Image (tube, rainbow over all chains, first blue to last red; front, side):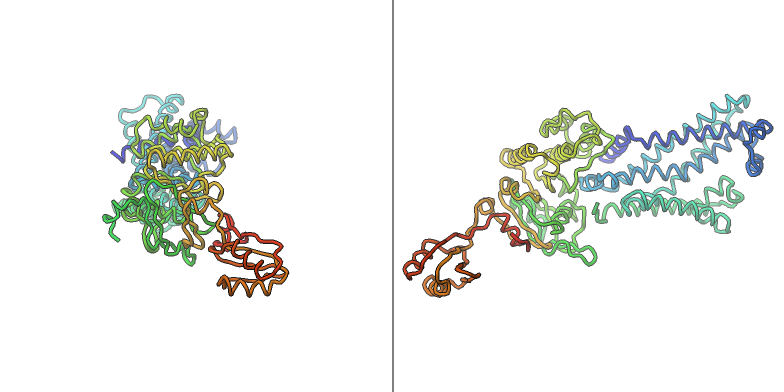
Length: 262
Length: 311
């Protein structure tokens, strides 16, 4: 019962929050980007004439088909990038605002189990990101229709939804560690630095044989940005699950026992 | 000390040998403190004296390095949730979710403390926040943010309120209003009020007892009457022969603490010194007394003396 109340208040804290609208705006732009990309694939000559295609883009475009499958492949790519960057921004905001706005002390001195706040905040981030993923999927459905990709093959939307939400779940596994860095540092700066560092390291490790074992390289591998997706095996999922558990446990332990000197 | 043995001892707060160290910095040093139920207790100290760290330890926000704080007999560090159930608080700066209105901020507190729905309106009325109830906290003045924080502290009808600088940002009328409110809560509803402040005059008018903390240590606890009255520390006199006056006072009044700061002045220290007796001895010795004045010390002077400042 207490947890449900805590969860309710965590959702209530998002009311009229500019960050909520900013992330929605970012996802709307992603949809626009996907539409432009698909138009370029379908109309390469027109795109070349407008100067929209460079050498590298031409190579990348070759990996996506000019059909519904290609469009949803682009959606999964964007969902994964969004999952690494936008979801981290959401988590940093949800946890960091309590310190930046000076409300952490008010929250932590309540007669409530502090672990509930950690769980509730992560659930709010997950729900928020799930809503954004649903927005991206709906955008893709509309873009495909408006670009004249023809009839949507039966079952393809459900399959794409499964891939997108599956990717979202994997991205969620990376977030408790971001939350831990946020609460330990008590602000926004350190977790943003951590996010950039992991993005960089994810790219570096992706070029090595350790990519399937380095959590921040696994998602780029899965979307084909860092080598063949076949390299990702059961061990990679265990790594992600372990990182999730360690981050969650660490954040909860920190909130329960560490000094709050905000 | 067993927590259970202290639940019925009439103490709202009990700190025993409370120590908090941050690395090399000793913020609170073996602090012993007792606050009785229903009293208004003020906590005075200079910046960095250890007031806020003590309050944070009371609220379970920092873990003591040694000792403990009990709230209604329950340990704030080991039994935090049970200890804080009846506690309202304001720590240092007023803080609220800036995107939420006054009412929405209070509703979050209401839900987390399981208070009844009508408690939000009651708290808004109590703190005079009716005109701002629908205004986002971000658009409140500093004083009204402080009122919002006080409303949050009082919303669930706590039996103990711990307030760190509650008068911050309030105008003079607001300070009087909050003082009256806190006294009413103590007298009419039996709420224990623990308040830290830098405003000595305010503390004198508000508190039943005043504790002075310096460099992490409790240096004195005064009753409100003691703090409000001007404490006599001795007498100071000007005479034509200060050397002889010193000798006479030492012999006849058994005053050992007599000193001659210079010129015609003689200073006799001691709370029990009777100025009339001093005057009589000086005149009977044939000396000419041109001035005699009691040395008194108010709360401000006492605070400065105890905390190493200049009065």
